[in-house]
Length: 276
Image: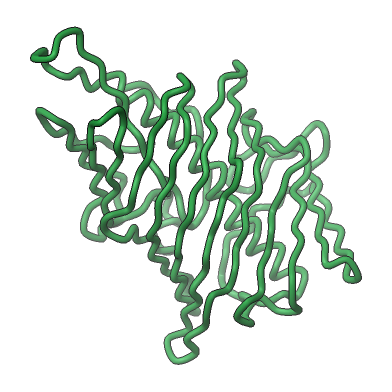
C-alpha cells in the first residue's frame, strides 16, 4: 500500500470512502490494490473538508458566535480574520503564498463564512463556507458547505447539526479531481475535555477516473477529540458501505479504540489496513 501524502487534523475525518476493483474475467479473483489507491484518494477528499470543522470552531470562538470547546488551533500566524458584523460575513485569508498551521498543514487562499443569527448555539442558526482560491497542502477545494443547528439538548450538552456539501470538488496537483455531494447529521457533544461526535449520512459523486459512486453510513461513525489530539484523525468506530458499479464494499472502523485500523470487506475477501 502506498503511503498517503496528505495529513490533516480535524474532528471528523473520512466521512466517505470508496474502493475500485478490476478483474479481467467474471470469475477472476478481485485485485484489492487498485482499491487501496482509490481509498487514499478519498482520504484526501474527506480530510480537506473535515479540516473545516477545526477552522470553523476557531473562527466561531474568536468571533463570539458560541460553540466553546477545547478545539485545537488551526489558524497559522500569517492568517487574517475579517469579521463584517453588518453583513454577517467572516473572511479568513491565508494569503496567496500560504502559511503553515500548528499541525503542519499549508493553507493558502480564502474561506468565506456567512451566517445567520447571533449565536450558533441557537437552533436554526447556519454557517455557510465557500472558497476563493483555497488550497490545503496543494489540493484545491471548491464547493459550498452548510452547517445548520437542528437542535440543542442542554441536559446532555449535545448539538445536532445538519451538514450539507454541494458541488464539492477537490483538485489534485496533476489537475485530476473528485466531485461529490453529501448530506449528514452530526451529533456533537461538548465537554470540558473536548467533544465527541457521531455521524450519519450519505454521499455520491464521481471519482478521479470519472466513475460514479454512492455510499451510506450504516453504523454511525464515532469521533473523539481525545483521540484526535493523539494523532488519530479517523473515526474510531462505525461502518460505511460503498456501492461502486454494482459492487458493495464496507469499511469497519472498529469498536472505539484510539487506533488507525480499518477492516475492508470486499467480494471475495477482507483486508485490514492502517491509515497514515
